[in-house]
Image (cartoon, rainbow, N blue to C red; front, side, top):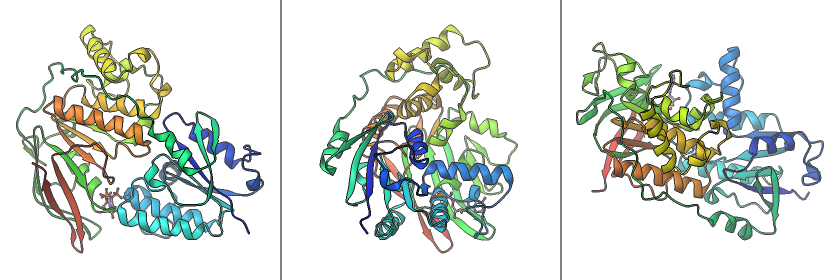
Length: 417
Ligand SMILES: Nc1ncnc2c1ncn2[C@@H]1O[C@H](COP(=O)(O)OP(=O)(O)OP(=O)(O)O)[C@@H](O)[C@H]1O
C-alpha cells in the first residue's frame, strides 16, 4: 500500500485551528482526497488543553485512566506521552501531529521521532510544524499554510526556503522606564538552601540551593519531569512545598506571614497558556496598563501618564498602528510580545518566562528572543527563562540545570562569565 504523508509548515499568520477543523471534517477536498471518509486523530497541545479542561470540569479520567496521576499534576512532557498513548488506542486511519516536539526534552524527542517513523510505515501522518529543526523525514506532500490558504511546494528545499525570510528586529529604542511602584529593592531576590520536594513519596527535587540576584539572566533547564515547574511554583508562591524550608523570597522567609500578593507583585510572569486567559475585548493599551494593576482586565480609568507609558511600549514593539485594536486580533507572536511587555511594564525585580517560544516559528522565535535580550540589557530586572531548546540568539549569563537522579533532581550551575 502506498502511504501518503504531508508536511505543512505554519507561521504566526496561519489559521491552524480552522484548518484542522476543516481537515478533520472532510471539508478540504480535493487536497486530501485520499483521507475522505477516514477518521483522523490529533496530537497537539490544543488537544492537551481540551482534555485538561474536560478532566477538570467533569472530574473524570480520560487520557489518564491507566495512571494514578491526574493530567493537571503531570509535567508537560508527561502529558504529551499520555496523550500519544491515548490517541493511538483509538486506532485512527491517519494521524495529525502539530509541533509534536515542543516541550519535549532531547531524549523523548528522539524516542518520539522513532515512534512516529515506525508508525508512518502503515499510517498516513500529517505533520504540521513551525520549526525547520522539527521536520520528520517522511516522503511527503509539502505545503505552507498562509492564513487559511494551503500553498503547495514541490520539494522540502523550496518549502523551507520560505522560512528564511527574517523579520525586522527591534529599533534602537530603549525599553520604557517604569512608573514609581513600591517593589522590592534589595539585591537578593530568591534564595533556596537545601530545599527538597516530594509528591506522594515520589522525590522530585533534592537539596536544591540557588540564589537569584537583581540583574541576573538565568536559563532554567532540565529534562521532562525534572521539576522545573515545581521550582517555579515555589518562587511564585503558588506551591506550599516551601514551608518550613530555607526558602527566602524578596527578603522574607517563606511562611513568615507574607501573602501570595506580597510575592506576586514583585514578579512578572509569562507562559504561552496565559494567552487564552484574555478572551474579552481588551485594547492593546488597556492590556499593557493592566500589568501595572496586576489585573486581567482594566477596571480603572487609566491616567495620562499610564497611557503615555503604554504608547512607548507599543512603539518599541512596533505595534503603535494597532493601538486601538483588540488583543484577540493580534497574531500569536504579537500576543506573546505584548503579554511579555505587560509582565515587564512595571520593571518587576524578577521576570519569569516559561517556555515562551513554544509553538512559534523560527523567525518569530528570533524576534521574541531579541525582546528578551533587550529587557535583560536595558533593566535591572532578573530574568529566568525556562526552555528545552537551545534558543538561537538567547544570551543568558548563567544556566541552572536540574539533573534527575533516583532521589529527585539536583541542581547544577553553569556560568558564562
Ligand atoms: N501535584 C502533584 N502531584 C503529583 N505529582 C506531581 C505534582 N506536581 C508535579 N508532580 C510530578 O513532579 C515531577 C516534576 O514535575 P514538573 O512539572 O515540575 O517537571 P518539569 O521539569 O517542569 O517537566 P516538563 O519539562 O515536562 O514540563 C513530575 O513527575 C510530575 O508528575
